[in-house]
Length: 66
Image (tube, rainbow, N blue to C red; front, side):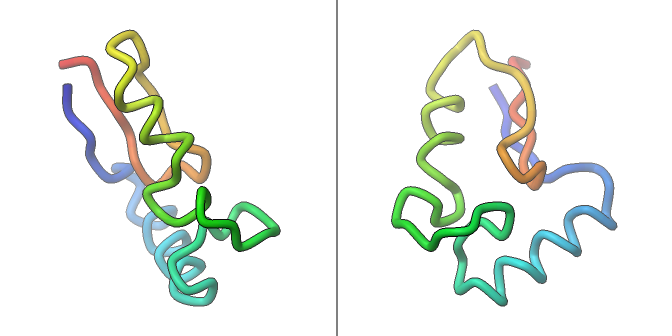
């Protein structure tokens, strides 16, 4: 299992900019809830799932099964 940044540097730059503006909360979500603080609870659960492979909600991170 490996977690890495999205290979698309443009997406990474936009998401990081959004994270700064929202004090570390997912820029893709309207509310600033603790479970949306990056890395969000949703992706932490997906990371823990050995069968999951894919991007987090905002596409900043990617989890592979390798």
